[in-house]
Image (cartoon, rainbow, N blue to C red; front, side, top):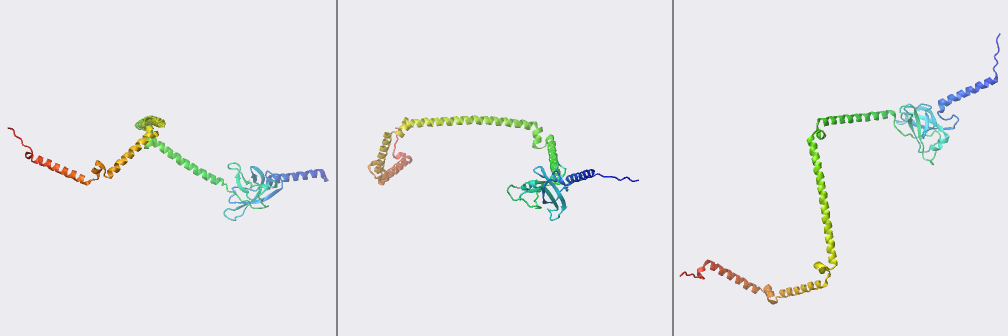
Length: 311
């Protein structure tokens, strides 16, 4: 004989509540991200060339705080830069920070970790974006490009190390200028002697400079002393500068000399006649010619003018 199973209503209510709780937990874990499922959210769209492993449910961060999650990731293939369409939903409480100049970019949790969407907030006071508006993206590169750049940098570093190693080997062999500096003792001694000579030369130049400065100071002192004596009406130069009588005597002498020169120019007096009378000049010239002729004749015919008798 079959027994009839009686299910009480109280047990049924507990089961229904547990089912709803478990369903809510699954929904929150798969679609709610780190935000509450009860938060009111808004959606926006962004496009990427390559999402590098971004999946549904990936977190959306703003200034390091999780504010939402990725709703969907799908192919768009609009152009070369808009290959993948990503729909994000974020809490309405941060929606005022999503203004016209806000940007989104891909981020990585750790060096090779999961991907997430990073929101760069816009300027406060600008107009907010609308629901399902397209947010512009900022390209920050991806891990592949970073690895490629790192490999190129390592290659350059390896080439530099090889070059340094080659240079050190040549230096140890004494090749080149640096090699000779390292291995040639005579070159080192010559450079040391050169430095010593330069040091001595600099010391001599300093001494000469001191002597020159001393001479300039003495000259300046002498000039200052001379200026003081001139100002004190001491000495000939001081009297010449400050004594009006000496100036008057010089002026009178100049006036007299000017008078004499005027008389000479006017052919007054003997000196004036000598300077201005051409007849006197001609007679003197003729006299000099006759005297020269007489002397020449005496030299040629001395017996004509001098007679000598021994007995």
